[in-house]
Length: 64
Image 1 (cartoon, rainbow, N blue to C red):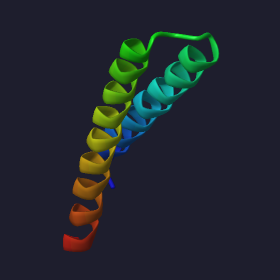
Image 2 (cartoon, one colour):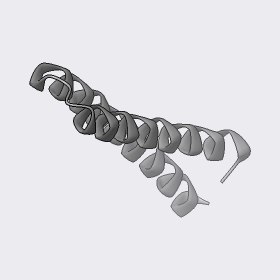
Image 3 (cartoon, rainbow, N blue to C red):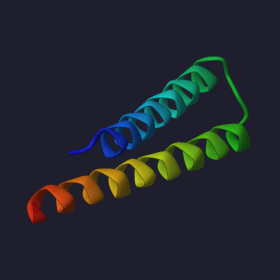
């Protein structure tokens, strides 16, 4: 895995974790259902981005 790929995966993982933390904090602070839904959607998008990055890295490793 090259450093660019590694950085992309790590950044995607950090975004995913940040959105999860924001979602948990908002729920604990009594955010509105709409706010929680928006945060959840953002979290899911971050998870999907992480999965795409990780899959690209795995595929590149398999080819080398």
